[in-house]
Amino acid sequence: NMSGKGKGKGKGGRGSGKSVSSSSKAGLQFPVARVGRYLKKGGFANRVGVGAGVYLAAVLEYLCAEILELAGNAARDNKKTRIVPRHITLAVKNDEELNKLLGGVTIASGGVLPNIHAVLLPKKSSAKMSQSSMSQEY
Image (cartoon, rainbow, N blue to C red; front, side):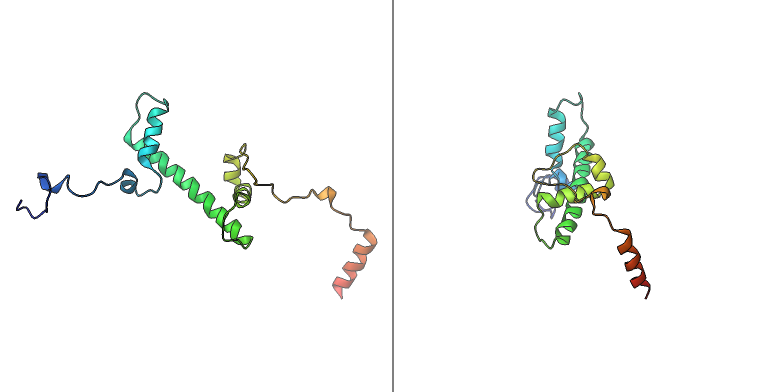
């Protein structure tokens, strides 16, 4: 073959070389082909376009990255290098939109947000308050 394309089929070099995954074509980490297959096998519609798997994989990847970013910040706030379920819970509950999305979701061994109702906190006595305010002024 004198075309200079190396050892391959004709047609201007197409068909030669390694196969490229649909995820790398879309620039994603999530598996586009697998998501598309699940859409087809799931019986959600009679026909599923090629772009549907790409779009859904991109959405899932974005949500995953968003949660991992916030959970990583929560881990760093707790001086930890590893994300544990507790950090995911803190990330989700402190973010308004993620909390709305995952409202009815329980994360195993996630715990709850640290929160004590104001009524339950010990009372500040009025005599002590006036004394402390005086000491603050001078």
